[in-house]
Length: 163
Image (cartoon, helix red, strand yellow):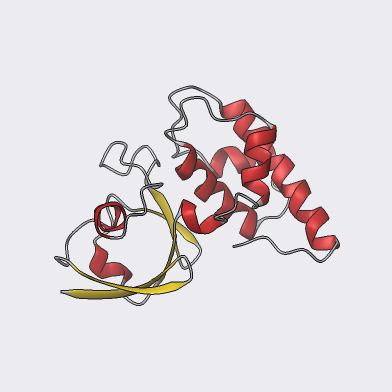
């Protein structure tokens, strides 16, 4: 079955079984390997991508359900690493093993798109389903706050962050 969608701003079409998980379509068919397989049960958040700006678990999402939708992966957040979250992640030295980071970043990006100045509780609530084996939750929270400030500063100066 041919499934057409917009991936990171570009139209794509794949010929795959309708029930194939989006995660495997992204990784195996479209070579977007930034999205990780974690648990396969939607519990860890490593596979988080955006569907029309909303974070979803790609390991549980049949590719047929994203036909005609806009999908954004970590590669689409900012290929150059220029998104405020990516900058904040590096400045706060968030990654250790790095395995969960794509899912953490994508979930945080969706939060900041809806709420430009989240509280600690709002960040914790939004990222509650994203597990970090290394336990860098405090740095993640600090990075989200820093990214929010960076985004506000760049918006005030007329710069634009993706998504």
